[in-house]
Image 1 (cartoon, one colour):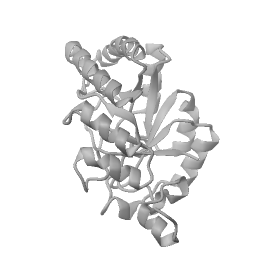
Image 2 (tube, rainbow, N blue to C red):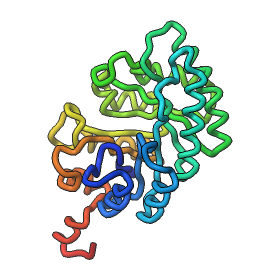
Image 3 (tube, rainbow, N blue to C red):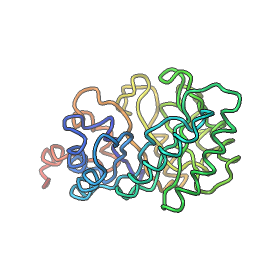
Length: 261
């Protein structure tokens, strides 16, 4: 069964970020993503995660400069901050954002930065992830396709760099999701899901056949996490029925069944 992680950046906005760990745990999640944790002290977030019994499994870098020529110092400083947060949180995956650029040297810059960062991260027990984004939501972003991400990973040549495959972005940019997942499965370290259009719940009110794709990911033997990086249409709990087949059962749902919360 796919293991789901709640994105505390996009879900559970019923509370400030430190309070979202407990809300995610009460909803049945055992892991969380924090795309932007840097507005709160790492020690506070780590304590809230421990108290709630949830594992942080992904954070983003605070800067999107990986492929931007001339920004090497800022990229390295951002990586240092990220690794400090990852260490405090016990988080072992970091998304390295490429940034907005069409410079001719962008790919070479990204490869060089990643080669440096891969060694720095490996020394801290952290894996780097590259995520292609769609050009509708993020015009001008450098990394936009799964084959492009695969080429960069191959050029970096480190076992510590993997692809973060966001099904929402890749539906918009490529389609052919099952075929593409199969083709790149050996370098995918993390999945993310949300509905197209609207980036809401990955349920029946959107165009992607998530039951099929999640079953495929399971059949392929994926043992990582699937991040739920979507914007709830209404309240977070009100939109979680889609996740019940994957072990996410809220306290309210358990009460309706007559079982203890």
